[in-house]
Image (tube, rainbow, N blue to C red; front, side, top):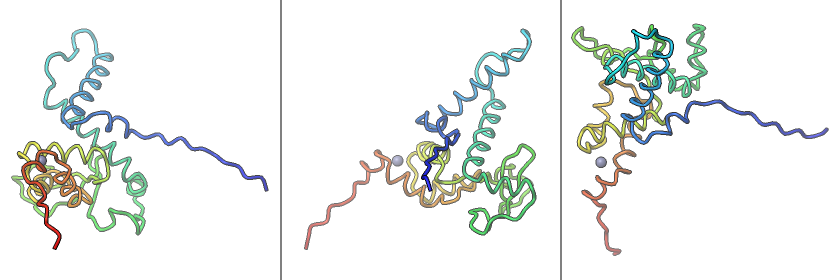
Length: 191
Ligand SMILES: [Zn+2]
């Protein structure tokens, strides 16, 4: 039989995540792109001008998280939408998860207090291998003045449920040049 080789082009949105070095820059640039789209469709007097609003930034964040979830858990989302059982190999099999009204996947958190915000009660699911998750961890590490892995992870868990987050938190601290300079690895003499 004749051997045939085929080539598949996979369409991913990883490009947009990899294009920016920081989480803040990613959210702000995408917010301006979305505003441009909205303004193109709006009438002359309804155009949004001036600095970005919190609502715009939140809308962008929701969109980015949805995109990252579609890339990381595509098969699981298809099964959940069809109300089918997840595969046994799924990373989400042990989680009590659901898809909210904006289409974002969340888990039922352990802390259910009416005073908590929605993200704390129902954290957003992220995969630690995704570029967006890495950007979020790096951003939090810097905002927390170069916090260690444990503090970083507990801060992230206020809003997110990162799968494989413990290793990523260690990796972020290990790869931070500032942290390395302040706390250099001691050289042990050979005995
Ligand atoms: Zn650091």
